[in-house]
Length: 86
Image 1 (cartoon, helix red, strand yellow):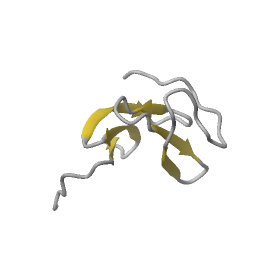
Image 2 (cartoon, rainbow, N blue to C red):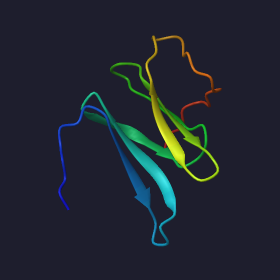
Image 3 (cartoon, helix red, strand yellow):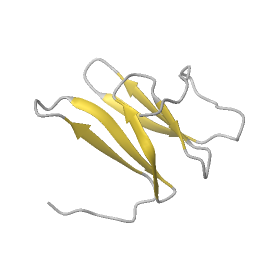
Image 4 (cartoon, rainbow, N blue to C red):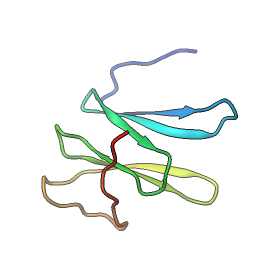
């Protein structure tokens, strides 16, 4: 498997033995900023650029959306949950 490096933003999906997704690791601004649980509405905010990375789970797929924000506000059609710490 070929691994490509130097992405500014990247998502790594972690699974357990039965292929169940358990978490997603997030890289933003070229730095690992943390991990979110595989749960609808989970978020992680980049301390460098204030982008909020939002996980949306639908009936048979999921989306990870980077939402550009200012330091104090978020423009999104979804309600955001408080950032969690793993």
